[in-house]
Image 1 (cartoon, rainbow, N blue to C red):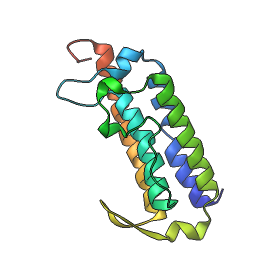
Image 2 (cartoon, rainbow, N blue to C red):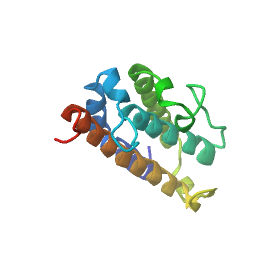
Image 3 (spheres, helix red, strand yellow):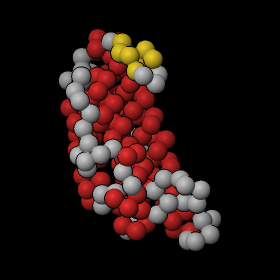
Image 4 (cartoon, one colour):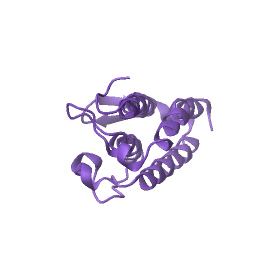
Length: 158
């Protein structure tokens, strides 16, 4: 793996162990619990992290069609139809392994290639990977916060 790919990989993985420890400690009902005000559950956030990593890279960098292993995307799936914890974790780990392989296969000059994104405009491959990593870290923090709210009980304060 080249230096830029290694940097992207390290960024993806930096907060992952802490996020997964939080998820591992939750029961299925806690994984599905939604904070007041319509915020997303830990399960929804975990699915979203994996789906963004999978589909943004597939679509923008690999030229592959998006995929939805649970039949639809997280945003199109009602919360009561969310897959269970084991399935979500398996999807996350599968996507992360794909990302490692994709990064390992990316040569240094490829990180300067420019792509078009509907939401962000012109981006380099490097910026796409940076976006994937920052999205994962951001939502990983939301996972930790939501898990604390679950643990706090009905009042939602710690």
